Image (cartoon, rainbow, N blue to C red; front, side, top):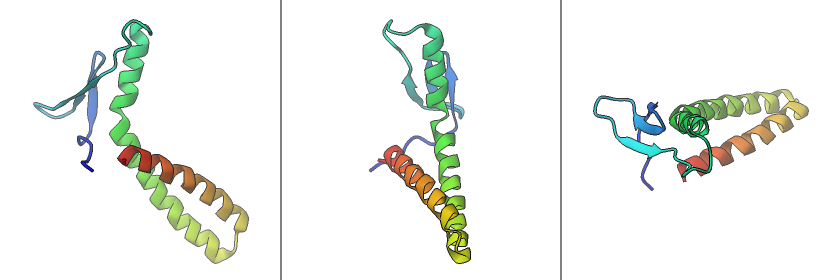
Length: 99
């Protein structure tokens, strides 16, 4: 499966573009009149942060994985359970983002 267009992305009105010279057009957040323009802009800002959000989620997954090993080593089962729960959700979100 192909990878997404590398970030960072930015917004130009409701359009989402790659933040490099001659960057690629990614998408337009357009509601076809169902939402107001401010909501379209908010949606575009959220979408434009997708590469950074994914990178931060992957970093959190690595940190929590290391913490899970430490919790297992020290026998802290409550912490291990909490970490496992978060890791499950994080890994699922990363998988959805990557396809």
